[in-house]
Image 1: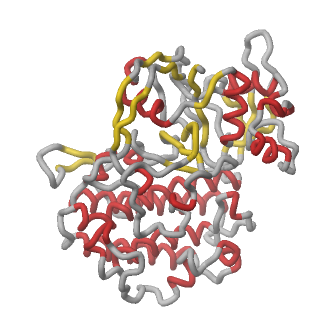
Image 2: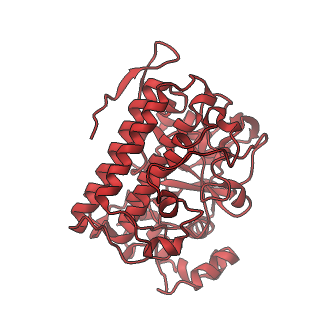
Image 3: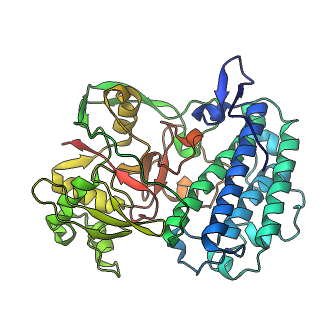
Length: 432
């Protein structure tokens, strides 16, 4: 693996940036080069952890339904290299940046079979499990080849947002896929050596004053389509939890029959719950959820990367669907925080104890386009395309322990369908 320093001077000025900084969305060529090396090293490190956990280079896992968010590990690794080559190395119109056509003129791939293997449009989910993919050694070699090609082209890219658009995209795409590797390991029960989060002090809810707030990202630097553009909204006074809902709090809901009380659930959420084949009476990966008695807060035994562990009561409740979050909030006489409330608190109340980055946090309402929305050329029809999710998906704010540091931006706006519970998802609430 190539080694890279964590800090260097930015191309835009004298300020010293870290490749771990959320400011990487505005990074110049030199810093991007280091970050791309770092991201590829991280991918290779995750592959080595999979090898160690599975005891084989084959990385063969039993087929899992696509809705579980699991794909063959070797396919995911190859797709990372393919994505960068597809939009950078093979894209003759990459210099147009966000103005690049959805179907630009492309060169041939380094590997003749690359599109058949790793292009999601040609390699449908069901085929990925039966496809004759390159082995792990060949895939690693492809990852190194595509990185070398990307870095060579980056040296000659224009130091503009358009010129660097696809390089920044490749970086953040690889970071997103890196977290997907960790989520997959949890789903498959693979021991990755991931430790539980340290216990933090639980604080009282925070009262924040009415304000006018700017949501969205500015026109400079890189942002995903659903994060554009900047616009102002008026927000009334609100009270918000200082931390996500904890296991101690969630146990009380379970103890009070929360999973058996239809009146607490959104109608679609109740249908989802009733359709669970395991007769669900607790969050995903939970083997036993204790009864809260005498103020002890009960206990939770959950599967944590292949091991049964006891979750501390002060830990954020995790692997929750939006439906479960909404039911808990109704039971507690509260409501899920809106994304603007979350963002205001994260920006302004850190010194007062607002804590985040344990779990991605569900927010109220559905994903909708913001004023000035413009689709990205690269995501059309794919899993990262927000247009297909508008009005259906729910917004996720924050980050989890598995999120790369440079992706932990207070402006980051993720999304998922409300039934998804495979990710490291939690929530916090506000007073009614």
